[in-house]
Length: 306
Image (tube, rainbow, N blue to C red):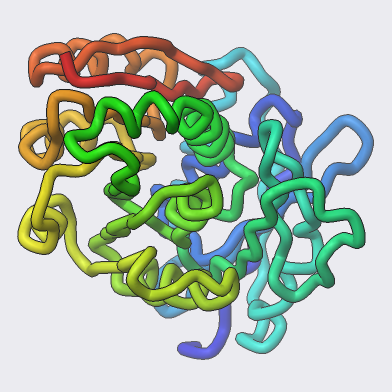
């Protein structure tokens, strides 16, 4: 059973898609994909069979139904079956296509050719089993917020102690490394990308190579904020943190400790009903929330040090 995987098929309303991805990520799914059929979404998810029992899948189905009820949508239809490892490694990739995000980015799966017209910043990506394909609303919000921040780079340079000093970013909970790669393409001088999951760190190393980014520009590290603090020799100019609301709140004192008075922050992975709690925690730790951007039931808080 160690070399077999559960393949889940979840048929739902398109408006429930982001909530399903969030639930699957929390459940520990190792790869997801979505296919649009008419007005509905077919989400595919993959779990190693040796870690998941039938009762676990039944519990997941119940949670998905409860999630749908909470937002007033019909319950999704869930089915599953076992597939071999070889089939898993390629199955979810079949439905993942290039996707434009914001005004400047194009996410291009690594196994597909690059588009002929390259009028966008292309992030080549193979997330493997790490979180972060660009499909989820929170990742898209973070990339769009990075665009906004780097549109202000000239002013940021003037605010630095040394004019023209390259921006240093900390990506907390880097997943596949997609946000770190995006920041480098936008002009960041250095990104420290940390994640507690060693699989995510390996994925970030891989995607750094896929995008021809020099090792000294994007530095993946296993761990959390404490590892950034031990590695850097000066405070960071920006923080990107796309995880979960309660984890953001827990890590805020540590994240604040690696900042300077002009540091900005992008915080996502937050459900709309959780936004006030995160905003209050930010203010208590010396931040000012400048804007709240939302997609469906998710939001992103753009903040700066007060």
